[in-house]
Length: 304
Image (cartoon, rainbow, N blue to C red; front, side, top):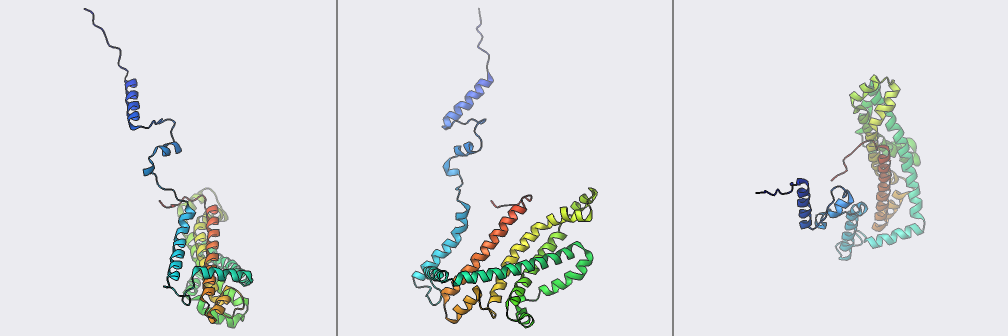
């Protein structure tokens, strides 16, 4: 009697066959070795994909919704023109101010004041923070005085500045300088003192001199705090400008607001406020761009 033997069982072939059959039943042919990145994303059902909305659209959706609500309230009579003009009226008034040249001239004067005040405030605040942060004797001599002056509202010093410097451009720039200096001082000082001591020890073990430690370890470590202070100082500079330009000013955006207040022109006042907000947003965008360029080495959480 002869016994016939079956062919040897090929487990590899059977496994692949099972894999292929299961893939065929799912209705999708997937090559795990070739489908990567976008190809794998394309295989995901559309119902399970996250909707990708452009970031600029997401960031502008809030202001656009607020603008639409404002227009609806104005059109329905909830907001009357003597309380708050409609967006259409404000856009028309802004066009008139641009055509007669009053708004561009006011923006030029205001930008010059902010630029000078921000420059002087950055030099003063950063310089004091370096002296106080890098040297113990500097901290003993500087920090207490700065902390004391910081609690004094800079707006309350306007009468003194007018007595000391007159009613020209100097008191206005001095107010902005004072408002800018303190946020920069606090953030740069905190950034310097917040540098990890182990990094200092590592630099010393590598033979870095005192200036080398300051240049390669301390200042880069304090840079994130300095950028945060700069962003905060920009907001303070526009706030200080509002107060400065409403005191004995004959030009600038604040001067337009004072004139509009005297004639009960709420539309012109809103136009000036929108210009303030636009200039502040533009300045913040510039600083954020600079921050991304200078702090590429620092990984940060960008949200989920």
